[in-house]
Length: 316
Ligand code: GDP
Ligand code: ZN
Image 1 (cartoon, rainbow, N blue to C red):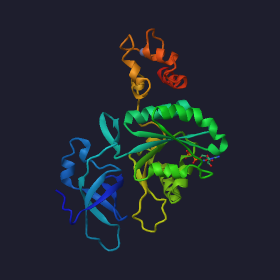
Image 2 (spheres, rainbow, N blue to C red):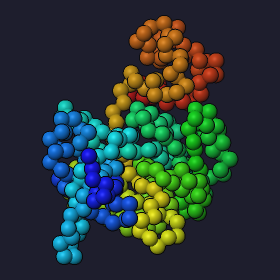
Image 3 (tube, helix red, strand yellow):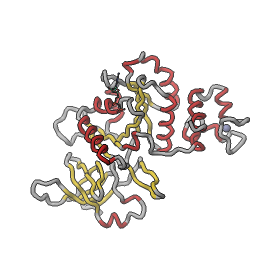
Image 4 (tube, rainbow, N blue to C red):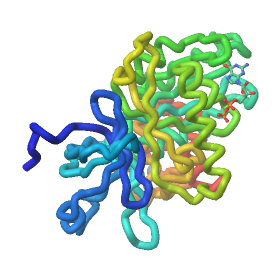
């Protein structure tokens, strides 16, 4: 058991080799090693430290002005684990991810609802709550979004229209991000960086630092990094409003491989019909006596969403 009189609680911002950088509740960072016992217990991944982990750590005596150090003694149980299989081994990317914001743009690049659907499917597979954020609404008539918002709302997906440039919808977005660890994903050019910097101007430097570093050969990195976000006027470093979970893999949409056969199971409006098809291996594309196709014909399933489905099936 952890000695709570000397140990402190914190969140792992990133891991670098054997060292984990932990942010404590008072806003200080500690470079921590992991207690040997925890590593010996790591027959599965429960005791390997990942970005996003809530931990208890023992601060060491500070040695003259250097960075503060410590020892991780305990990892709290996790939820929202992002992982992937690499060379037959399960690899942790981030933990305690509460939700994923899928950023799309209303124009420049043009709105691609079928691409949003693919992101939604991967979020469903990862078990993460998706929120769709449509940026650059300053470039369109916002009422153009009403049909799209309607279809997604019916499926239980929240859609936030925003403009990073005009500062529109930012309060709603901040409300969604408050107190949560959130990953952002979306095609390049839709305005993810602009949006994040609009949400928290203090993030600007940090976001740029990471991309500059990754260009110097860190692009093979698959582990995540956590960035504290702050938007309330408060001088204390301890006041964190939310965390951004950033990984190159999430941004470039290569994190989860969804296979065509499982897609219907990750589309909430298709799922109920699947078991009613005549053929158990029905692909819901060319078959006769397909309950999914009947539901599309009868108007229970949105035609455009079904097109997304068939596109994925045909490997487009
Ligand atoms: P990222 O690749 O998703 O990170 O996108 P960036 O943040 O780099 O933005 C791509 C381009 O879109 C830049 O030229 C931004 O100035 C522009 N942009 C971002 N947000 C908005 C917006 O709300 N409205 C308009 N009109 N342009 C935007
Ligand atoms: Zn079918």
